[in-house]
Length: 246
Image 1: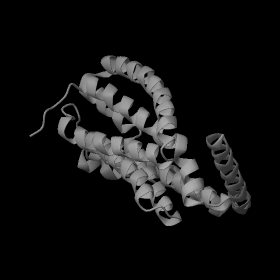
Image 2: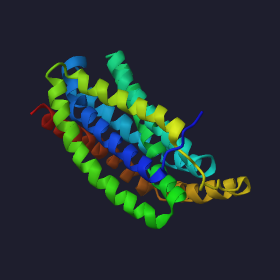
Image 3: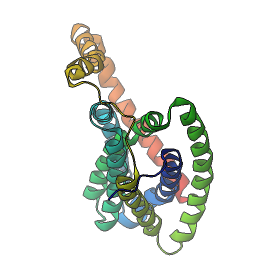
């Protein structure tokens, strides 16, 4: 039996728990990858590339899912997949599971991103949603700091403990939302409009592919851009790793 919570309060609580859990995990996840699993710099680069690739590839499909099927379900799936990804790399500490964890986290992020904002607008209206956004942002900033400090205390036990606690909070949040999250204001897009929706979203991709075929110079730009993107990813990962270990 579901006990539906006030959407305004639930949204603020969801954002707050999410911010606290992510602060716990992300502060020490890179240290966990390096110290406990022993990933090399090249492997850390691959981890970052996989994560960014998942968010790029699945941003459009998950957005369509939220619009056509359910924003509530999209939010819950996003939180659960993210929590499952973090927990997986703790339960099985290996490079392969870290890569799989990034896949789950990346897909989960695209399910959640944007869907939670659209959901609260549907449930309480745009005017009240603005107030919810502001309050949730304020509390999220405070809880991010609190999560970072709490993670430092938990890391004194083990570097993996903050990740475990953060992943557990996300999984618990997803389960609780299943029983408390309403969806009364959502109206799915008409099924007949699905093909038009896909066509509009994929049109820029088709146009870009056509330009590349017509202009060989663009192939050279892409070939030159790929190594530069990898170098940039390596720099970002190395910087994050250095900051986390300080």
